[in-house]
Length: 448
Ligand SMILES: [Zn+2]
Image (cartoon, rainbow, N blue to C red):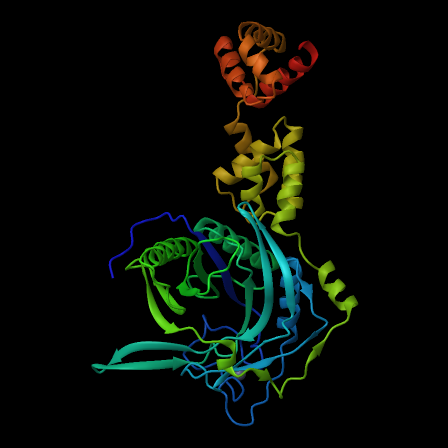
């Protein structure tokens, strides 16, 4: 099939996301084996009768994994279930030794949350806990095509985060996925490394003629291992489905894989329905009950989340674009506050500190306050202009620019930038825009 080239559609993309995150607990989900598939010395070293699905192996749920899933749910604004259970999801695949995966069907640990992104809110349908599968490797040995299996990953705790179909563009999907990545990393419950597969993205995509009516089909796209590929895959899929719908064909309900090299999605299998999996409660695992006090204790242990950190930084006068970047840096808020205070004492503004950290890509492990102050001193020359000279230059510019003054009074505060430029020009030297801006604002409020 030729690659669709058309990027835009008059139809509304309806997108839901499923994100899988491997938890970095010390041991696996239902056994005592080490949970370290990426650093294992050899394939099939971290295995036991439980994670190999042998007769008699009895699973015991990993308490830490349950706790971390609840914390993630709380961070995503979910309601935590006080009663939850594990179910068996049956299907056959060579990487699934038991013939079923232990997952959660109708009573997940967390439900009904919301994630805020700059492109709009995305409601969280549910967050549940399950086990990862083994890993197949297709290769050639002695000229023969063979499939090898490694069970080091079998039984690694895996959280699935499912959204409502609230996403309507590739960019929005990317913003959402980035937000989840940030939150998971802040909670320190997973490496969320997409290249290695400890965070995996799937998108359910369909196109609606009427945005208020959900389409009667959806296409699931898997194998997406970067934010960029997510954008590519959704853009491609929107164009592919649009072309089919234009030809009066309904896209098939199926699972497709993203192939970044060929920039295309490829059909993998037709989509199963829940009943095909013959879910039933796992008789080996007792249901879980939690009391509200326990949930509140976990909530109190949550670290400061990126959204809150951004807000606090903005309250300290940091520009939104800097606040966004600093929130995802490894600098704790308290460290930043210490730096801001020290810099202020030397006549530097918090935004100058932020700019230095971001532009110099400073590393928390190397940064000392003195070091930052030194960079600031070398980066920003102090104002050497006589304050009297400065004020008269500002007055003169305001006299000469009645239109800019009128614009400012009409609420167009962005003319400040223009006025700063005019004052600098008049003085014939560069003056700190921050200082100029504060003088301008002060003179505006007293004179006009
Ligand atoms: Zn095991």
